[in-house]
Image (cartoon, rainbow, N blue to C red; front, side, top):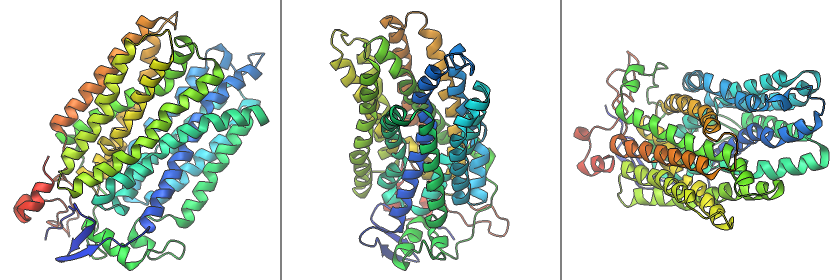
Amino acid sequence: MTQNIINNKECGTIDNKTVKAPAGLGIRHWQCVLFFFGITTAYSNRLCLSLAIVAIKDEDVNHESGLNNGYDSIVLSSFFWGYTLMQVPSGYLAKTRSAKLVLGIGLFISGFASLIVPLANDVGDWSAICACRVIMGLSQACLLPCTHTLLSKWVPPSERGRLGSMAYSGAQFGTVITYPISGALIQIAGWRSTFYFFGGTAILWSCLFFLFGADSPMTSSRRALCVIGDDEKKYIESSLGVSETTPKTSGNPPWKSILTSMPFWALVIAHCGQNWGFWMLLTELPTYMARVLKFNYSENGLVLALPYLTMLILIIPVSLLSDWSGKKGVSRGLSRKVCNTIGHWGPALAILSLSFAPLDHATLPVIILIIAVGLNAGSMCGFQINHIDLSPNFAGILMSITNCVASVIAILAPLIVGEIVTGDQSDVMQWRIVFYITAAIYFLGNLIFIIFGTGSVQPWDKVTDDVNKGIVLSVKSSTVPSAISASVSN
């Protein structure tokens, strides 16, 4: 028996019965709100050090911590050491255990690690702070794999664009609010207050998530604090092709099939291209604005927030357009590729134009930078949720692998830029080389995604239990009407 999990309208089908979406907001929407604020708190915890480290170095006049001796860059990058290491294990735990439990515990530990950063600085040196950052990275490695796993169980395909983008826009929202809040806290109460505030926020979110979060509509219906209505539950389960009687998948992912899948590797390359561009801009923009565009510190902080605020705003129309195109019969694969093209080739063109923008007046370069970062919003409905398209059953595993590889790129990007931009950081020609490389990576990554990517469920997304062999969750054109088969074309 084959279960179809394709849906282009606001309804689901199970046992040849159509189940329409309930009116108004449902538990699935509130779950996505929880995911949004979870990602927001996670990004706030990892980014607040970027601003606080300046105040720490100013306080450390005797150079006791070592941050003024060149160790600050090591401390800033140490988060990604743990983050990269635990990607695949956390994705596996999210699939085989409880994604809710793994995510809640992960962000709780991250918040606690943030709380003890001031103590680590007071009783130790840069290595103690570095240890806290590594712990934070290890615990936050579960963020995207768990969120993907939870989204694959809570969000119907027809709502994947807007609800998935809403959840992941917490990264941009966290980026936008962290800098001004950190600056105000440092000015009012000192740099230690930033870690107390954001660490406490992460712990508070974890407690709320334990109370109101749920792994799936099925588990939600059994809990007093997170009860889903029967209509919404039937709608979600029918849209995803699952029910209480649907056999559960094995905890062993089809590793060989995944690692030999061309659409999966196209997804890996697209994710790497995004991470290079996004983290290069995030880490190097402050230096470029200060050294080349001559912004002072207060102006720099304000201008830095504008590109990410623009990206946050653009996510809304892009996600709505993505879901609307699905209702109009546009294949999911085509929709993902168009959105990802906006999110990659748009910034590539903007960055190229930045190389030739006159620097006499900073207004034009700032506008170009806002466009370059803002258009990254397209990737939220592109590669970012394509993991769920390829494999609803192993979406968290796929995200853990792609994010692991892409995290290595996030580590390398600032290091490579540091090798290119040497000596005089106001040298425009050196920055042009960085922009050329970034534009090329954006372009090639998306080109491979266009050629080899797909929006179709892959054949290896299936039940592997020996008892349940033959129960396949992927769509096969030979067993469904031609109209439905056409909707999942590449």
